[in-house]
Image (cartoon, rainbow, N blue to C red):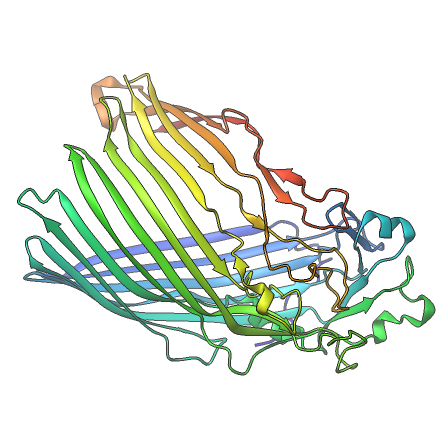
Length: 520
């Protein structure tokens, strides 16, 4: 799985990135009621990154600024294939589908020369002024790696029209990936739809299904390269500044970080279920209300098994720095209600309006997220990073004439949660993510926002005698964030920062784009 065939970052051949893709679709009828569909996609990705400034460390002051050299030298390559083959059989009131699919079979290469001059991390501007970083991290060694990612799925589904006003769907799917030895990934699913009354203007719907998640390729690559021998990630806590080699802090002899999968790691899965009602209220207008919920089990997270235990006087194994273990030990719960109206509201406006109210809680930020305290996970349960209580979406088109044809997209939403931290590495695990006593994860809420996007376009036939078959000139004008609303992002929850409680970034301002297209 390991290779060293990639050229070094400084090789003049790696001048420009490129991406090549090829896609094919085949659909052929085997018998009168049996159809086979085959889709394939292949691609080659080549992406070099070269830093111009070298020889100086990077400086990170939490929630204030990042300076120094980027040290982002890296070469990434990818050769992949994806395929999806499905058979569809129509037999009486049944539509049966079965097939095999591979979301990704790829060989990914990496030549990693990032952070070779090291990075200092400071808790606050005051600590930076005093020259007191809480950590110095650096990489050295063999950064060349090649890894295979293999994913496979098999599925079967039967959509059955029991009666003219009653339909059911039942199916099952099995998923597999090569990084985890878990094979018991059977995901059943069931749905039902029932229409009421002679006019069948009211439809009741319900469904439930399992979904399995995958690691992606990076954790498997990290386990291979960050084994303490090949590509060494070294970490010094409370180092000397600006020279980490002073006072006996020999960075190259420091213990290295190690990444590994837990022995009992499994593919996470979620059970999703919903029920709702849809009502036709006009010739071309419907309104629906749906309750949607999910329960996630064995979700991914990272945990440092070698973090200093209380009273935080040192790591249990002094020969290892951070021992990152990829685990499937977290969970998630989501609940939401959506009310949607779609169709032709007036003579001129056709579109969709959706209002949603929801809640999402979990105890992980993803496979790369560490808990604030590696020995106490009870305070990790809180609002999910993506949790938004309220959201309003409007999408549609307003057409009064061939000249006045306006596409509209409006979105308004409440704020997402963010962390409250003391901004210091009190437990000496190398990360300044410690929270005040008793505070749970994502306990603060950011600011909401709204945005309005508009699109106008018109076709100009250049040969009216040929109608649709003749050459056409299309002119379009797109306006994003027309009202130029400031939608703040990246809130600061660091109590040690003078910017605490403030936003340090925002979504893009108003943008205008004029496009022309010639079709013949």
